[in-house]
Image 1 (cartoon, rainbow, N blue to C red):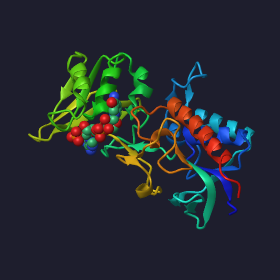
Image 2: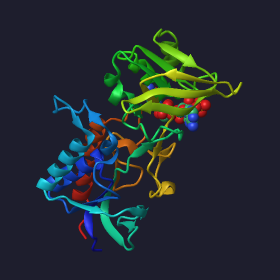
Image 3: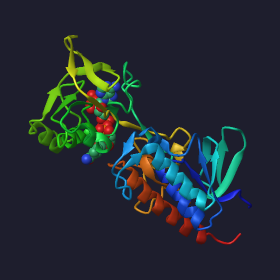
Image 4: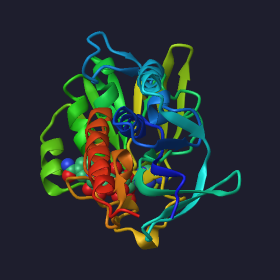
Length: 311
Ligand code: NAP
């Protein structure tokens, strides 16, 4: 059966663009489908200091732009075409497009990423990238000698709070209960860290600031209803991630908490379907590991395509 492409990549963040680069350079018949502009979450990242090869760092926008330009050198076709559904179980994979119609292919790389949960309080959007951050690994070095707040009590919040103390003078951890969700070992490390102060049973109600960025956070104790505020220059909202999986046939794929389970070669549970980047089930979500996984995903897809029986 004739198909539209050998390989379709869904998602144009660092993982999708890297898979696209490798696939186009390997002269596969490939197209990349992206719902907006290529770049993904990186486009919302003010500054990237930890992606190798850029000794002075660069803006997230510039990194996305450079990654896209590199794919263009090898004529990768990038289509702005949101995907609304997929049938992946057959040998021929079918992708349904929002604009109407379908595209078929032999192999798919899923790289639709994830988005951080937002706390949805006044000031959060206004001060995004001006003191409000969703990634301490990315932004902690900007808070050297400052006072910051972390919202959340899970593994990410507690691990990142400890990481932040390498830079910040003080880290408040604001948690809505009086018990952390994070594993005991991370808890013990955080409790022993005298730069961390826990604010229990408390939710943030507003992030305040001025032209310079964030200057404080308003709080409410959920048991007493007492309100208070803290002077902080950074607020790290670390209350979990949501995978961008709305267009995926979740019933066909092996998943964990909504993220796609892969093996080390980035195979999903369906032959011919690979996944990479923030969409997959893993502990650490960085540009550099997304790029590595996407490289593996593309090489695995290439191997899969090369070993398909002749029509
Ligand atoms: P998570 O485990 O879902 O924890 C989210 C935290 O945010 C919880 O403490 C939750 O409070 C709080 N929260 C959620 N919504 C909130 C809201 N609207 N307002 C205030 N607080 C809110 O998310 P995660 O920490 O990002 O971890 C995600 C997954 O990655 C987990 O499976 C985790 O184990 C894994 N992970 C593992 C490691 C590691 O092993 N080193 C590191 C990072 C992440 P409640 O506790 O009250 O629900």
